[in-house]
Length: 458
Image 1 (cartoon, rainbow, N blue to C red):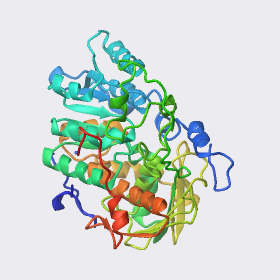
Image 2: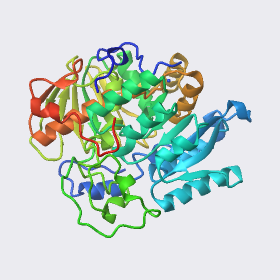
Image 3: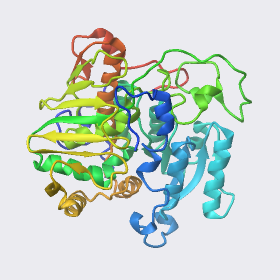
Protein backbone atom coordinates (compact mmCIF):
# COMPACT_ATOMS: atom_id res chain seq x y z
CA UNK A 1 0.00 0.00 0.00
CA UNK A 2 1.46 3.35 -1.04
CA UNK A 3 0.99 6.17 1.44
CA UNK A 4 -1.15 9.10 0.34
CA UNK A 5 1.09 11.89 -0.96
CA UNK A 6 -0.26 14.35 1.61
CA UNK A 7 0.53 12.03 4.48
CA UNK A 8 4.30 11.96 4.10
CA UNK A 9 6.95 14.52 3.37
CA UNK A 10 10.43 13.32 2.44
CA UNK A 11 11.85 16.83 2.39
CA UNK A 12 10.91 18.02 5.86
CA UNK A 13 8.23 20.59 6.61
CA UNK A 14 4.99 20.01 8.46
CA UNK A 15 3.75 16.57 9.19
CA UNK A 16 0.08 16.12 8.31
CA UNK A 17 -0.54 12.41 8.73
CA UNK A 18 -2.88 11.63 11.57
CA UNK A 19 -3.60 15.34 11.66
CA UNK A 20 -6.61 15.14 13.92
CA UNK A 21 -5.97 17.90 16.40
CA UNK A 22 -1.19 13.89 17.62
CA UNK A 23 28.07 0.41 31.30
CA UNK A 24 28.00 -2.13 28.78
CA UNK A 25 29.41 -1.86 25.31
CA UNK A 26 30.78 -4.23 22.74
CA UNK A 27 33.04 -3.31 19.90
CA UNK A 28 33.75 -5.06 16.66
CA UNK A 29 36.27 -7.25 18.40
CA UNK A 30 34.20 -8.02 21.47
CA UNK A 31 33.94 -11.61 22.67
CA UNK A 32 30.29 -11.07 23.58
CA UNK A 33 27.95 -12.71 21.09
CA UNK A 34 24.71 -11.04 20.03
CA UNK A 35 22.50 -13.22 22.21
CA UNK A 36 24.75 -12.79 25.27
CA UNK A 37 24.84 -9.05 24.64
CA UNK A 38 21.04 -8.99 24.40
CA UNK A 39 20.68 -10.85 27.66
CA UNK A 40 23.22 -8.66 29.42
CA UNK A 41 21.41 -5.50 28.34
CA UNK A 42 17.83 -6.77 28.34
CA UNK A 43 16.53 -3.85 30.37
CA UNK A 44 19.06 -1.21 29.48
CA UNK A 45 17.57 -0.05 26.18
CA UNK A 46 14.03 -0.09 27.52
CA UNK A 47 13.26 -0.27 31.17
CA UNK A 48 16.38 1.57 32.32
CA UNK A 49 15.56 4.50 30.08
CA UNK A 50 13.07 5.73 32.69
CA UNK A 51 13.01 5.16 36.43
CA UNK A 52 10.97 2.25 37.70
CA UNK A 53 8.98 4.59 39.95
CA UNK A 54 8.24 8.00 38.49
CA UNK A 55 7.18 10.65 40.96
CA UNK A 56 3.68 11.96 40.36
CA UNK A 57 4.80 15.58 40.23
CA UNK A 58 7.22 14.75 37.41
CA UNK A 59 4.34 13.38 35.37
CA UNK A 60 2.07 16.33 35.98
CA UNK A 61 -0.32 14.32 38.15
CA UNK A 62 -1.95 17.26 39.85
CA UNK A 63 -5.27 16.13 41.25
CA UNK A 64 -8.25 13.93 40.58
CA UNK A 65 -9.73 13.66 37.10
CA UNK A 66 -13.46 13.49 36.49
CA UNK A 67 -14.61 10.18 34.95
CA UNK A 68 -15.81 12.04 31.86
CA UNK A 69 -12.29 13.35 31.31
CA UNK A 70 -10.49 10.03 31.62
CA UNK A 71 -8.93 8.18 28.71
CA UNK A 72 -10.31 4.64 28.69
CA UNK A 73 -7.53 2.27 27.67
CA UNK A 74 -6.78 -1.35 26.89
CA UNK A 75 -3.53 -3.20 26.40
CA UNK A 76 -2.36 -5.80 23.87
CA UNK A 77 0.78 -7.82 24.56
CA UNK A 78 1.22 -7.05 28.26
CA UNK A 79 4.41 -8.90 29.07
CA UNK A 80 8.05 -7.94 28.74
CA UNK A 81 8.10 -4.30 27.71
CA UNK A 82 4.32 -4.11 28.09
CA UNK A 83 4.68 -5.19 31.69
CA UNK A 84 6.90 -2.14 32.18
CA UNK A 85 4.63 0.34 30.37
CA UNK A 86 1.44 -0.70 32.14
CA UNK A 87 2.36 0.44 35.69
CA UNK A 88 3.55 3.79 34.31
CA UNK A 89 0.24 4.35 32.51
CA UNK A 90 -1.63 3.45 35.68
CA UNK A 91 0.12 6.29 37.53
CA UNK A 92 -1.82 8.84 35.47
CA UNK A 93 -5.22 9.71 36.97
CA UNK A 94 -6.52 10.56 33.50
CA UNK A 95 -6.09 6.90 32.45
CA UNK A 96 -8.75 4.28 33.17
CA UNK A 97 -7.49 0.83 32.15
CA UNK A 98 -10.34 -1.62 31.54
CA UNK A 99 -9.02 -4.60 29.55
CA UNK A 100 -5.87 -6.54 28.69
CA UNK A 101 -5.15 -8.99 25.88
CA UNK A 102 -2.27 -11.47 25.98
CA UNK A 103 -1.78 -14.87 24.34
CA UNK A 104 0.23 -16.23 27.29
CA UNK A 105 -1.87 -16.97 30.38
CA UNK A 106 0.77 -16.16 33.03
CA UNK A 107 1.27 -12.73 31.51
CA UNK A 108 -2.47 -12.27 31.05
CA UNK A 109 -3.13 -13.05 34.70
CA UNK A 110 -0.27 -10.85 35.89
CA UNK A 111 -1.54 -7.89 33.87
CA UNK A 112 -5.06 -8.27 35.28
CA UNK A 113 -3.64 -8.46 38.79
CA UNK A 114 -1.69 -5.23 38.20
CA UNK A 115 -4.75 -3.36 36.93
CA UNK A 116 -7.12 -4.71 39.56
CA UNK A 117 -4.58 -3.97 42.27
CA UNK A 118 -4.43 -0.35 41.15
CA UNK A 119 -8.19 0.12 41.29
CA UNK A 120 -8.95 -2.18 44.22
CA UNK A 121 -11.46 -4.31 42.32
CA UNK A 122 -11.65 -7.28 39.94
CA UNK A 123 -13.10 -5.43 36.95
CA UNK A 124 -10.27 -5.66 34.41
CA UNK A 125 -11.42 -7.80 31.50
CA UNK A 126 -9.00 -10.33 30.00
CA UNK A 127 -8.80 -11.59 26.43
CA UNK A 128 -6.56 -14.00 24.56
CA UNK A 129 -7.52 -12.69 21.09
CA UNK A 130 -7.15 -9.01 20.21
CA UNK A 131 -10.22 -9.22 17.97
CA UNK A 132 -12.29 -9.96 21.07
CA UNK A 133 -10.89 -6.92 22.83
CA UNK A 134 -11.95 -4.63 19.99
CA UNK A 135 -15.41 -6.16 19.59
CA UNK A 136 -16.17 -6.23 23.32
CA UNK A 137 -14.99 -2.75 24.32
CA UNK A 138 -16.44 0.04 22.26
CA UNK A 139 -15.65 2.35 25.19
CA UNK A 140 -11.88 1.95 24.78
CA UNK A 141 -10.39 5.14 23.33
CA UNK A 142 -6.70 4.19 23.21
CA UNK A 143 -4.58 1.06 23.36
CA UNK A 144 -1.08 0.16 24.43
CA UNK A 145 0.46 -2.30 21.95
CA UNK A 146 3.59 -4.02 23.26
CA UNK A 147 3.58 -7.30 21.36
CA UNK A 148 6.48 -8.82 19.46
CA UNK A 149 7.61 -6.91 16.38
CA UNK A 150 5.61 -9.03 13.90
CA UNK A 151 2.35 -7.86 15.52
CA UNK A 152 3.05 -4.14 15.90
CA UNK A 153 1.68 -2.90 12.58
CA UNK A 154 -1.26 -5.33 12.11
CA UNK A 155 -2.47 -4.70 15.68
CA UNK A 156 -2.05 -0.93 15.27
CA UNK A 157 -4.01 -0.96 12.02
CA UNK A 158 -6.83 -2.95 13.60
CA UNK A 159 -6.92 -0.56 16.55
CA UNK A 160 -6.99 2.61 14.45
CA UNK A 161 -9.67 1.19 12.14
CA UNK A 162 -11.68 0.45 15.29
CA UNK A 163 -11.40 4.12 16.25
CA UNK A 164 -8.64 3.79 18.86
CA UNK A 165 -5.56 5.96 19.35
CA UNK A 166 -2.35 3.94 19.69
CA UNK A 167 0.81 3.89 21.76
CA UNK A 168 2.88 1.19 20.02
CA UNK A 169 6.23 -0.07 21.15
CA UNK A 170 9.14 -0.10 18.77
CA UNK A 171 10.22 -1.28 16.26
CA UNK A 172 6.82 -0.34 14.84
CA UNK A 173 7.07 -2.05 11.45
CA UNK A 174 8.58 -5.13 9.85
CA UNK A 175 8.72 -3.67 6.33
CA UNK A 176 8.50 -0.42 4.39
CA UNK A 177 5.06 -1.48 3.16
CA UNK A 178 3.89 -1.79 6.76
CA UNK A 179 5.13 1.73 7.47
CA UNK A 180 3.22 3.09 4.49
CA UNK A 181 0.05 1.36 5.70
CA UNK A 182 0.60 2.69 9.22
CA UNK A 183 0.96 6.31 8.08
CA UNK A 184 -1.94 6.11 5.64
CA UNK A 185 -4.31 4.50 8.14
CA UNK A 186 -3.54 7.06 10.85
CA UNK A 187 -4.23 9.83 8.33
CA UNK A 188 -7.47 8.35 7.05
CA UNK A 189 -8.79 7.42 10.48
CA UNK A 190 -7.57 10.66 12.09
CA UNK A 191 -5.91 8.75 14.91
CA UNK A 192 -3.16 9.80 17.28
CA UNK A 193 -0.17 7.44 17.15
CA UNK A 194 2.93 7.39 19.33
CA UNK A 195 5.88 5.07 18.65
CA UNK A 196 7.72 4.00 21.80
CA UNK A 197 10.94 5.73 20.72
CA UNK A 198 11.12 7.42 24.10
CA UNK A 199 14.49 9.10 23.79
CA UNK A 200 12.78 11.80 21.75
CA UNK A 201 11.28 12.79 25.12
CA UNK A 202 14.38 12.53 27.33
CA UNK A 203 16.31 15.65 28.33
CA UNK A 204 19.83 14.37 27.57
CA UNK A 205 18.91 13.29 24.04
CA UNK A 206 16.79 16.38 23.38
CA UNK A 207 19.71 18.59 24.47
CA UNK A 208 22.03 16.86 21.99
CA UNK A 209 19.51 17.36 19.19
CA UNK A 210 19.16 21.02 20.12
CA UNK A 211 22.95 21.51 20.01
CA UNK A 212 22.92 20.09 16.50
CA UNK A 213 19.97 22.24 15.40
CA UNK A 214 21.40 25.44 16.84
CA UNK A 215 24.63 25.26 14.85
CA UNK A 216 26.80 25.23 17.98
CA UNK A 217 28.55 22.10 16.66
CA UNK A 218 29.18 23.84 13.35
CA UNK A 219 28.24 22.04 10.16
CA UNK A 220 27.41 18.43 10.95
CA UNK A 221 29.28 15.90 8.86
CA UNK A 222 28.84 12.59 10.75
CA UNK A 223 26.22 11.09 13.06
CA UNK A 224 26.90 7.79 14.80
CA UNK A 225 24.23 5.34 15.98
CA UNK A 226 24.72 2.40 18.31
CA UNK A 227 23.26 -0.95 17.21
CA UNK A 228 23.40 -4.56 18.32
CA UNK A 229 25.58 -6.86 16.22
CA UNK A 230 23.38 -7.64 13.20
CA UNK A 231 21.85 -11.08 12.72
CA UNK A 232 18.77 -12.29 10.82
CA UNK A 233 18.66 -16.08 10.80
CA UNK A 234 16.28 -17.93 8.45
CA UNK A 235 16.67 -21.15 10.46
CA UNK A 236 13.86 -22.79 12.45
CA UNK A 237 14.00 -24.32 15.88
CA UNK A 238 12.91 -28.00 16.06
CA UNK A 239 9.28 -28.78 16.86
CA UNK A 240 8.21 -29.37 20.46
CA UNK A 241 4.77 -30.31 21.84
CA UNK A 242 2.54 -27.26 22.02
CA UNK A 243 1.12 -26.10 25.36
CA UNK A 244 -2.66 -26.12 25.66
CA UNK A 245 -4.25 -23.18 23.88
CA UNK A 246 -5.34 -21.33 27.02
CA UNK A 247 -1.81 -21.40 28.43
CA UNK A 248 -0.29 -20.26 25.13
CA UNK A 249 -2.17 -19.70 21.88
CA UNK A 250 0.69 -20.50 19.52
CA UNK A 251 -1.29 -19.62 16.40
CA UNK A 252 -2.02 -16.15 17.78
CA UNK A 253 1.56 -15.77 19.04
CA UNK A 254 2.75 -16.28 15.47
CA UNK A 255 -0.01 -14.06 14.11
CA UNK A 256 0.92 -12.68 10.67
CA UNK A 257 4.34 -14.40 10.64
CA UNK A 258 4.82 -17.59 8.60
CA UNK A 259 3.81 -20.81 10.32
CA UNK A 260 6.63 -22.30 12.37
CA UNK A 261 6.43 -25.25 14.78
CA UNK A 262 6.29 -24.39 18.45
CA UNK A 263 9.56 -24.29 20.37
CA UNK A 264 9.94 -22.81 23.84
CA UNK A 265 13.25 -21.30 22.74
CA UNK A 266 11.38 -18.52 20.96
CA UNK A 267 9.70 -17.44 24.18
CA UNK A 268 12.68 -16.82 26.44
CA UNK A 269 13.83 -13.47 27.79
CA UNK A 270 14.74 -10.38 25.81
CA UNK A 271 16.00 -11.30 22.37
CA UNK A 272 14.84 -14.93 22.27
CA UNK A 273 13.01 -14.45 18.96
CA UNK A 274 14.79 -11.31 17.73
CA UNK A 275 17.47 -13.13 15.75
CA UNK A 276 14.94 -14.81 13.46
CA UNK A 277 14.00 -13.16 10.17
CA UNK A 278 10.35 -14.21 10.55
CA UNK A 279 9.97 -12.46 13.90
CA UNK A 280 12.63 -9.78 14.31
CA UNK A 281 13.75 -6.56 12.64
CA UNK A 282 17.52 -6.91 12.47
CA UNK A 283 19.40 -3.65 12.92
CA UNK A 284 16.20 -1.94 14.10
CA UNK A 285 16.37 -3.59 17.53
CA UNK A 286 18.27 -0.52 18.70
CA UNK A 287 18.34 1.40 15.43
CA UNK A 288 14.67 2.23 15.92
CA UNK A 289 15.94 4.40 18.79
CA UNK A 290 19.36 5.55 17.70
CA UNK A 291 18.71 6.13 13.99
CA UNK A 292 15.57 8.00 15.00
CA UNK A 293 17.69 10.28 17.22
CA UNK A 294 20.23 10.85 14.46
CA UNK A 295 17.55 11.78 11.95
CA UNK A 296 16.01 14.09 14.57
CA UNK A 297 19.37 15.81 15.13
CA UNK A 298 19.65 16.39 11.40
CA UNK A 299 16.14 17.81 11.17
CA UNK A 300 15.26 14.87 8.93
CA UNK A 301 12.69 12.93 10.96
CA UNK A 302 10.34 12.98 7.96
CA UNK A 303 12.71 11.39 5.47
CA UNK A 304 15.29 8.60 5.23
CA UNK A 305 18.87 8.08 4.11
CA UNK A 306 19.54 7.93 0.36
CA UNK A 307 22.78 5.95 -0.08
CA UNK A 308 23.61 2.70 1.73
CA UNK A 309 27.09 1.18 1.73
CA UNK A 310 27.47 -2.49 2.62
CA UNK A 311 30.40 -2.88 5.06
CA UNK A 312 31.62 -6.30 3.83
CA UNK A 313 30.92 -8.00 7.15
CA UNK A 314 28.10 -9.98 8.73
CA UNK A 315 27.41 -7.81 11.80
CA UNK A 316 26.86 -4.33 10.26
CA UNK A 317 29.77 -2.86 12.22
CA UNK A 318 30.82 0.33 10.46
CA UNK A 319 27.80 0.35 8.15
CA UNK A 320 27.55 3.77 6.46
CA UNK A 321 24.56 5.54 4.98
CA UNK A 322 24.34 9.06 3.59
CA UNK A 323 21.56 11.66 3.66
CA UNK A 324 20.61 14.18 0.99
CA UNK A 325 22.56 16.90 2.83
CA UNK A 326 25.75 14.84 2.62
CA UNK A 327 25.89 13.87 6.32
CA UNK A 328 27.07 10.32 6.98
CA UNK A 329 25.34 7.92 9.35
CA UNK A 330 27.76 5.34 10.82
CA UNK A 331 26.61 2.29 12.79
CA UNK A 332 28.62 0.67 15.57
CA UNK A 333 28.02 -1.69 18.50
CA UNK A 334 30.67 0.03 20.63
CA UNK A 335 31.94 3.48 21.49
CA UNK A 336 29.63 4.39 24.39
CA UNK A 337 29.57 3.64 28.12
CA UNK A 338 25.92 2.62 27.97
CA UNK A 339 23.17 1.54 25.61
CA UNK A 340 21.34 3.19 22.71
CA UNK A 341 24.12 5.72 22.22
CA UNK A 342 24.43 8.45 19.60
CA UNK A 343 27.20 10.90 18.69
CA UNK A 344 26.95 13.99 16.48
CA UNK A 345 30.13 15.43 14.96
CA UNK A 346 30.45 18.87 13.39
CA UNK A 347 33.13 21.25 12.22
CA UNK A 348 33.07 23.10 15.59
CA UNK A 349 32.64 20.23 18.05
CA UNK A 350 30.84 17.04 18.98
CA UNK A 351 28.35 15.68 21.51
CA UNK A 352 27.69 12.08 22.57
CA UNK A 353 25.18 10.44 24.90
CA UNK A 354 23.79 7.04 25.86
CA UNK A 355 21.41 5.75 28.49
CA UNK A 356 22.34 6.62 32.06
CA UNK A 357 24.84 9.35 31.20
CA UNK A 358 24.43 12.00 33.94
CA UNK A 359 25.00 14.57 31.20
CA UNK A 360 26.15 14.22 27.59
CA UNK A 361 29.85 14.03 26.73
CA UNK A 362 30.95 17.13 24.80
CA UNK A 363 34.05 18.36 23.02
CA UNK A 364 34.07 21.53 25.16
CA UNK A 365 32.66 22.06 28.68
CA UNK A 366 31.19 25.35 27.47
CA UNK A 367 28.61 23.42 25.46
CA UNK A 368 27.01 22.17 28.70
CA UNK A 369 26.86 25.50 30.53
CA UNK A 370 23.24 26.23 29.52
CA UNK A 371 21.93 22.66 29.55
CA UNK A 372 18.84 23.46 31.63
CA UNK A 373 17.99 26.55 29.59
CA UNK A 374 18.26 24.67 26.31
CA UNK A 375 15.84 22.00 27.54
CA UNK A 376 13.44 24.61 29.01
CA UNK A 377 13.47 26.59 25.77
CA UNK A 378 12.74 23.42 23.80
CA UNK A 379 9.76 22.63 26.02
CA UNK A 380 8.42 26.18 25.78
CA UNK A 381 8.75 26.22 22.00
CA UNK A 382 7.29 22.77 21.34
CA UNK A 383 4.98 22.34 24.34
CA UNK A 384 6.37 18.83 24.75
CA UNK A 385 6.88 17.20 28.16
CA UNK A 386 10.05 15.36 29.05
CA UNK A 387 8.04 12.15 29.39
CA UNK A 388 7.06 10.03 26.40
CA UNK A 389 3.84 8.49 27.71
CA UNK A 390 2.64 11.84 28.99
CA UNK A 391 3.27 13.26 25.50
CA UNK A 392 0.94 10.57 24.14
CA UNK A 393 -1.79 11.29 26.68
CA UNK A 394 -1.51 15.04 26.13
CA UNK A 395 -1.72 14.50 22.37
CA UNK A 396 -4.79 12.29 22.68
CA UNK A 397 -6.60 15.02 24.57
CA UNK A 398 -5.32 17.87 22.39
CA UNK A 399 -5.70 15.90 19.11
CA UNK A 400 -2.22 16.80 17.94
CA UNK A 401 0.58 14.70 16.41
CA UNK A 402 2.86 12.99 18.93
CA UNK A 403 6.61 13.60 19.03
CA UNK A 404 7.15 10.07 17.60
CA UNK A 405 4.25 10.12 15.16
CA UNK A 406 3.43 7.38 12.66
CA UNK A 407 5.32 9.28 9.94
CA UNK A 408 8.42 9.67 12.13
CA UNK A 409 8.20 5.95 12.94
CA UNK A 410 7.80 5.02 9.27
CA UNK A 411 10.71 7.13 8.04
CA UNK A 412 12.97 5.96 10.85
CA UNK A 413 12.12 2.35 10.15
CA UNK A 414 12.61 2.83 6.40
CA UNK A 415 16.28 3.63 7.00
CA UNK A 416 16.51 0.54 9.22
CA UNK A 417 14.75 -1.70 6.70
CA UNK A 418 16.91 -0.62 3.75
CA UNK A 419 20.00 -1.32 5.85
CA UNK A 420 18.65 -4.80 6.60
CA UNK A 421 17.97 -5.44 2.91
CA UNK A 422 21.47 -4.26 2.02
CA UNK A 423 22.92 -6.63 4.62
CA UNK A 424 20.84 -9.55 3.36
CA UNK A 425 21.77 -8.89 -0.28
CA UNK A 426 25.37 -7.98 0.62
CA UNK A 427 25.50 -4.96 -1.65
CA UNK A 428 25.14 -1.20 -1.76
CA UNK A 429 21.72 0.34 -2.35
CA UNK A 430 20.31 3.72 -3.32
CA UNK A 431 16.94 4.88 -2.03
CA UNK A 432 14.40 7.27 -3.54
CA UNK A 433 12.44 8.72 -0.57
CA UNK A 434 9.71 10.17 -2.81
CA UNK A 435 8.95 6.97 -4.72
CA UNK A 436 9.86 4.90 -1.65
CA UNK A 437 11.81 2.43 -3.72
CA UNK A 438 15.38 1.32 -4.20
CA UNK A 439 16.83 2.78 -7.38
CA UNK A 440 17.23 0.26 -10.21
CA UNK A 441 17.16 -2.81 -7.95
CA UNK A 442 14.11 -5.01 -8.50
CA UNK A 443 15.31 -7.68 -6.08
CA UNK A 444 15.68 -5.20 -3.25
CA UNK A 445 12.28 -3.69 -4.02
CA UNK A 446 10.62 -7.09 -3.72
CA UNK A 447 11.90 -7.16 -0.12
CA UNK A 448 10.07 -3.96 0.83
CA UNK A 449 7.04 -6.03 1.80
CA UNK A 450 6.33 -9.49 3.18
CA UNK A 451 3.32 -11.73 2.78
CA UNK A 452 1.20 -11.93 5.91
CA UNK A 453 -0.25 -15.28 6.97
CA UNK A 454 -4.03 -15.47 6.59
CA UNK A 455 -6.33 -14.15 7.96
CA UNK A 456 -4.07 -11.21 8.87
CA UNK A 457 -3.55 -8.40 6.39
CA UNK A 458 -2.61 -4.76 6.06
